[in-house]
Image (cartoon, helix red, strand yellow):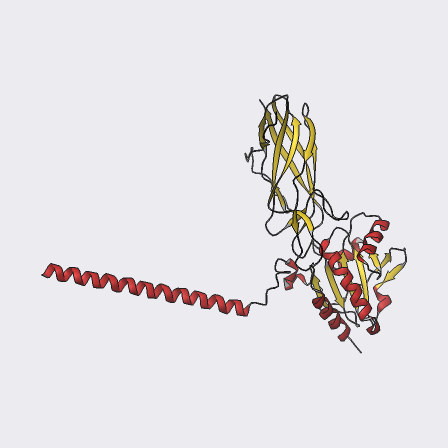
Length: 206
Length: 150
């Protein structure tokens, strides 16, 4: 009798322990899920197009809020072009290369934006970062993208002063006062480019 | 008679390989072949996860193709290289065009005639890597494979 009672007690205790463990485990999983959901809500919206983009790191935006470094370069026709030529106008500086697919995706969009915001004085300049490529080939490549805005051939001083990353495209949005109001690395959607263009247009007015 | 290609083995020789600052690694560095006869050796490469490189025949002539440039060691004869077909890849923002790329592991077949004994196949893999949004400048990966002719 005592033995049977002991077995029953042990069974009840075992079942109780299993139920308690299960409840604890469930609570733990619920807490983990809840925490994960909270973190997901706190995290910025993930855009699959840029999630692997190292340029989304705010630390990479080294020139943000600073004056855009001055330069004088030559365009594809050998004409000298200085950033100072566009003083008082919003300027987009887009660093690209002929072998860069994402760059060539953005370039027609920059052309569209140049056309759309011409009235607000927008200037788009493409800066080709090809290493040792002939001007003629760069001209042909840019023509294929459909852009007509000036393509400049940057020198080492410019890539240094703009602290370019090891990857492209990289774009600087400069307002009318010459300040960098945004800096992006990697291809972005046309809407994102337009938002940055509007930021450059709206900022730095007298 | 057609023979199955020999896959270069993942045998590390001597010191650990020097890390290559790039997006592609050579997975194999040693192979045994039948000496004095044409043999097909597959060299295995792997593209870092999340990246792609142009195939040997990208769709756009402006894109930089993947090219393996080999130097035959003394006594070794290189006949030809054969590249794998690329896979179709679309940039998330690009609604119109696709790319022809290598992702993950890919193998380049090399037809060669090796001498008896030990020799070394050296060369460079030239490639240009991108991820979904950015591209990196063209790079070269040193290739060094120990070939033992039996």
